[in-house]
Image: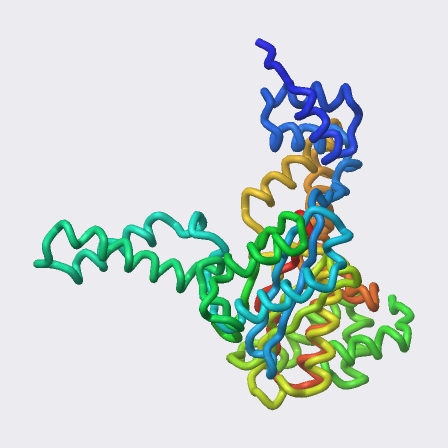
Length: 197
Length: 197
C-alpha cells in the first residue's frame, strides 16, 4: 500500500539531507511518511554522503550570554525576531541583555506557563489545598489559583517581576518592546548554569 | 625493530603526561610512535599518578561563555577544578575560553563517549554495516569500529580534534592542562545555541 507523500515533506527532506527529489520521494514512501526514518534510509543508501547535514536557521534573532562577576553563574539566551535588521537594532540588543540579567538574578526554570510539567503543577495544587484544609470549599479554589499564580511568577520567566522595574512583569516589558520595535519578538530558550549545581 | 621517534612527538607526550624525557622516548619507541598507546604505556608505568589526579574531587571552577560574531551562535560552559585559586588562574581561564571556541566551531553533542545514547550508537552501527554490504564479514567489524571512532570524534567534545591544534584531541589538551596546573580539571557540561536550531 502506498502512502500519500506531501510535497512539503519532500521539500523538507531535500533541505535536510541534500538528497535528490526522487530519492527523497522513495525514502519517504518506504518510511510511510516518517521523516526520521526517511533520513535514516537516505543515510544508509548514500554511502555516508548525507552525513554532513546542514543545519538551517529558520528565524532571525540573537544569541546572547551573561557571566556574573566571578564566573559562578552564567546565562545563555536566544531571542527571536522577524528580521535580521531588528536583530542588529540597539533596542533589541539591550532587551536581550536585560533578559540575561533577569535570568541570572531571578533564576526562572521555564520561559512560559505552558512549559511547566503538569505533575509539578498538580503537586503545587495539592500542597496549596492541603494548607487550606478546613476553609470553606468555595474559597479554596480561589486561594489555590492565587497560589498557583504566585508559583508561576517564581518559576516562569514571563511571569516574573522584571528585576529592573519590579512593578512590571517580563511579559509586560516584552509587550512594550514589541510595540516599540514593531516586530514580533519571542524569548525562545535559555540555559542558566550555577557552578556545581 | 626500532622506530624513529621525532623530538616533536616526545615533547608532545611530555606535555600531555608530565612524564620525564627518557620515559617518553621509551614509551613512544615501544608504541612504535603511536601517541595514544604511548600514553597508555606511561599511565601503566606511572603507578597511577596520572589517574590519581583524575580522581580528585572538583567542586570549584568557572562558568564561561562565548558569542560568535553576529550573535548567531553562542556557548555556555562549566569547567570544574579543585580550588578557587586555580579557577582564577590565567591558564585555566584561557583553557575555558579555548573550549568555548571549540564547541562553537566544532559543534559537539556530548562531553564524553559515555553520554552518547545507546540507541544512537546502535543506529550508527547499523548504518555503517548497511553501507558495507557485500564486503567480507571479517573486515566489516573492523571497519565498523573505525567508523564508530570517527563518529565519536565528531560528536564527543573530548574525542574531537582540538580546533587550534588539530593533531591533538581535546582530551589530550585537557590532560596537558591537568599536568601543567597540577589539579584535576573536568569539563562538566555545555550548551550551544545556534539561532533557529
